[in-house]
Image (cartoon, rainbow, N blue to C red; front, side, top):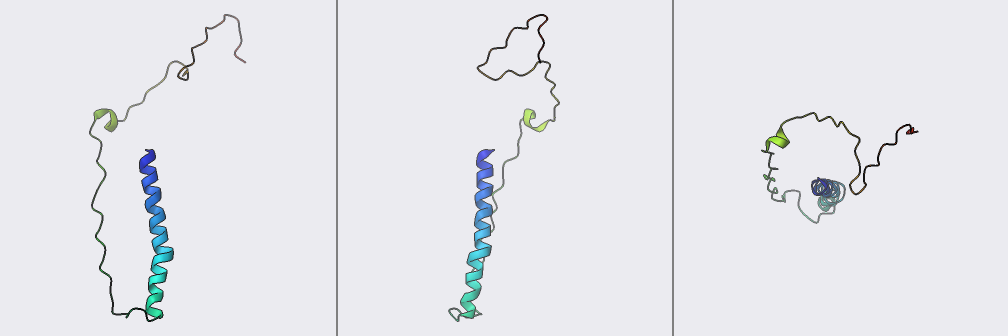
Length: 88
């Protein structure tokens, strides 16, 4: 999850930079007569890779799990219940 979020964030930053800096500067090249309006850059190739979909039944089925006991953080022993003691 974290790596995917990082990759998406990096992609979004790249697209933002492309649109706000690179393309703006490229448009000015024609205005400054650095390139001719007839000059065209080759269209970049489309990204065709896709994420693999999950196959395992544990990941594709929707299940509702109810927890009968209160969760205890890992590494902490469950404290014994003292009769008559209040939890407040």
